[in-house]
Image (cartoon, rainbow, N blue to C red):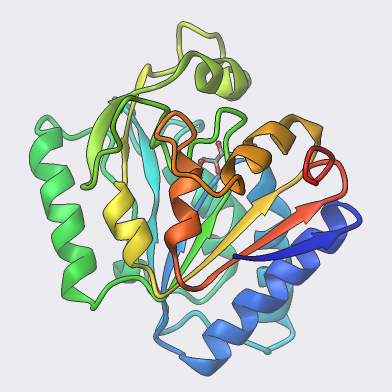
Amino acid sequence: MNLIRVKDYNEMIERAGEYMKLQVREKKDSVLGLATGRTMVGVYERLIEHYKNKDISFRDVITFNLDEYYPITRENPSSYYQYMMEHLFRHTDINTENIHIPDGSTTDPLEECKSYDKKIEAVGGIDLQLLGIGRNGHIGFNEPKPVLELNTHLTDLDETTIEDNASAFSSREAMPQQAITLGIKKIMEAKKIILLANGREKSEALRKMTRKEVDPRWPASILQLHPDITTIADEEACERLE
Ligand code: F6R
């Protein structure tokens, strides 16, 4: 694993934006695996800047988001669908047909999960997967469990995840307790992965992720087996590393 230690959030998003820019410049029809959450807001700002400066175009880019709450409608302002529109897509020239986000309003989540994996396979897999990391070591919403699920699946959200993300909803009760998430297999099959960790609250997850053992109670630890992963972490997130 290539670990790049940076000073702070700004340096982290600068590097991540540059990395993603190069990917899209090298392969105009890149298949990007995208994440949401607080960490990614600045990364998408950088990407929009690169787009506005005409360094990149999203015209041929295909995207697959990692996850979506369940149940939730696309219109719900707290949905990841709205997050992506707000923070990235509506500022770019991306073709809306190339945007994929799990449908949180489906009445058949099992079918939605299966067809999501098939859609990824149909375009030849993910070229670059962007990942954040949960305080509990989750990637996407692959939560700490005795076993890791390979395929896209419906999952119960962990208590820490609910605690960390409830502020995006009007109340804790208004937050869906489940989500549809890409499984470990499609994440691990991505040709390249870039993972971002910032802040002290991520330091334990980062330590467990780099401990040279795979522990399903810290799902990100499996990423150590990926042949091309770059982790960019700030000083606070690196605090517990040797
Ligand atoms: C969201 C996702 C999650 C987040 C993680 C960190 O699509 O996949 O794994 O990346 O929960 O979230 P923040 O950045 O809000 O700390």
